[in-house]
Length: 160
Image 1 (cartoon, rainbow, N blue to C red):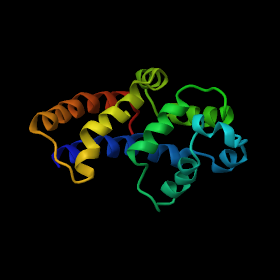
Image 2 (cartoon, helix red, strand yellow):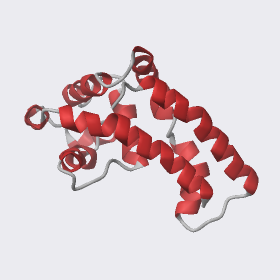
Image 3 (cartoon, rainbow, N blue to C red):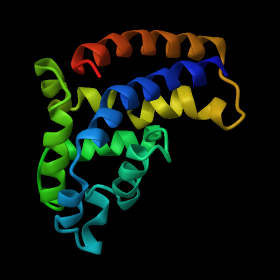
């Protein structure tokens, strides 16, 4: 269970340092006006539930994005391509405004989203979140993983 708490530190820090500043600076009127992708392209776009969560976070109805949606937001906006190019560009630029120069590079090359990648989540966070225990060695790996990732995140993000 300790690894769940440790890995959650990354979720909390990314939400406080990226998601919350993002939603307070975002023009939701512009975001809503941008073209939405065709249903056939959904798997490469910013998921609807993420777009719908952002104003809820701004209004205080949600505390932030969970790790999966947070990963998808960072991963799918780090490069701006089709489909959903307009919304990706809008969110990419808005996220990048809250990053340091090194953070922008880490965002665009995938190192930022990699801090909460599915493999790490499945190894360190998901088992204890679903009532499964981790061996001590894996819990220790989690601690080391978070200790490496946290200073990087802090260095990549402008002060909230």
